[in-house]
Image 1 (spheres, rainbow, N blue to C red):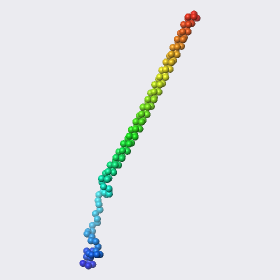
Image 2 (spheres, one colour):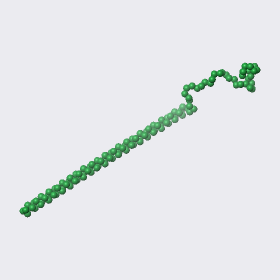
Image 3 (cartoon, rainbow, N blue to C red):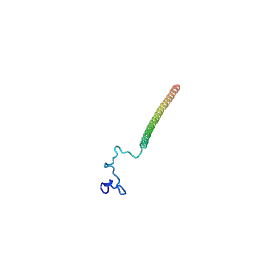
Image 4 (spheres, helix red, strand yellow):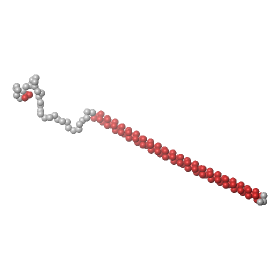
Length: 122
């Protein structure tokens, strides 16, 4: 019990710690577990998904607003064009009416002069 038999023999103050077996420590297999608990990971994923959805919603709202603005602009333009066309039509009608009254007046004057000429016996 002295000297021979390696560490087993000299159990005492200068004893080596007893090695139980020679197999290497078992390495963990499978996916590396992160230090963060799965609940925290799930929470973060949910938050990220929510943020993405919010961004998509904002984009869609922006797009819809732009489309609505374009539609309003088109409607305004169409309204202006219609007003312009109406004004042109009205001007044309008024011009024709004015011409007609002028012609009628001239014809009346001519007729009166002709009558006067006949009355004076020319």
